[in-house]
Amino acid sequence: MNALLLGLVLTLLPVAAPLASPAADDAHPHVLLKTTLGSMLLELDAEKAPITVANFLQYVDDGHYDGTIFHRVLKDFMAQGGGFDTDLNQKPTRAPIKNEADNGLKNVYGTIAMARTGEVDSATSQFFLNAVDNDFLNHRGPGSAFGYCVFGKLVAGLDTFEALRRVPVVQNARVGNEVAYPTEQVVILHAERVAPDAVEAVKARMESEAAEAVAARRAALAAKVQQGIGFVGSKGLDPKQGVQTDSGLWYVDEKVGDGPMPRVQDDVELHYTGWLADGTQFASSHDGEGQPITYALTKFIAGWQQGVTGMHAGGVRWLVIPSELAYGAKGQEPNIPPDATLVFKVELLSVPRFAGHDEALGFLRSQGVDPTAGHFTESGLWVLDVVEGDGPKPMPSDKVTVHYTGWLPDGTKFDSSRDRGQPTSFGLRQVIAGWTEGVGDMKKGGRRWLVIPYDLAYGVQGRPPTIPPKATLVFDVELLDF
Image (cartoon, rainbow, N blue to C red; front, side, top):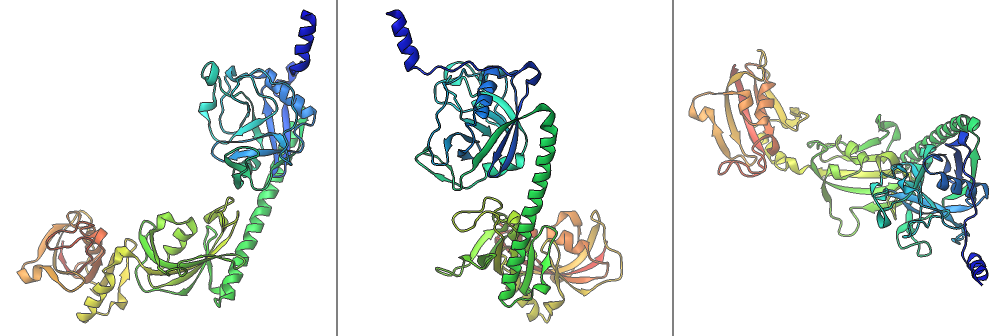
């Protein structure tokens, strides 16, 4: 009776067949995973995880992984596969194995570990590749803290792995409730052992293939940029007048503005329209209510930061932005596909930092000054020399003597050494930044106009009651001595 019951139990419960441990001279076997995204080479650790490695190799030898998919991909967590076929059917497995998560190996980027259920010893065929350092998956104790067994690492094909972890994903209830199922299946075409004496040759071949793939991708991206430039040409612009920067950004000015240029940290007010390289429009500030947008340039993609910082307010510029300066290999659903080159028409309406600048120039005109000879410095200070001077320039540590008059942009005078009939002396490091720069660059005997944006003057707070918040200031300065 006891023998009958024992036989019945053995029949009903799946029992793992004994798995041969790897040979002593092959404590670190290699497995090549060929996928639809490329190949990845794994080095397994049979010394630290002998049961797990033997189990994995048996599935490899049985062809179990061929035709399975990575069904769960979370770019900042892991990529899991080895259990479902392309029809989302779970493949049959052998019995679960003992969990060896207490082997000292850690769940860090690029390692391979066994997937399991909430039961400690429940792993069968499914595995995952760590996309980041997942310390919380490491062994910390018994029960729920036992962890997930790491049994190897990627040693080649990291470019393939990076492409895998960044694939677009959606929710698919057949494999789970997360937004983690690749929109385009990533299939393991074949998994095979690599003989020890062939490992270096396989690595070299993979490196060569990766280099060829990179070259092909660059060529494809360059072709998209040329397509985008062609689209700009179809809008009546002359591509021969365009400029390509070292970063790959291409631009051409439809209209060069005469206003100030923004820094990358500045807010900008602008209108824009965006297209894919093939001419498909995906966004426009002119749509809907037709209102311009105002944001700090730092909130935009790199291509905008580089392209708009070179514009003057009042200008119109076309940008052709390669994907690496836009949304990259991932794209931005639903309108921007992976590796998309983007085309923008940007109208820079104003730079709020210089809100009082045009009014200030109007005041100068009322004083008989022609502002067309003035220029902006890199900081945003506006300078117009009336008399250049023939003496030396002061050092930053010098104390200078000047005559000056200061106005708000509307012509309100707020201070004047001339009215007091007495020049003023001060250290160049003891005044507002606009003066430190503007007077520090003058020659002795010179006279110049300065239009100073608020952040180079008294800032957001101003200096009540004389200087309002965010006030642009106008000065007429003569450098008498130092």
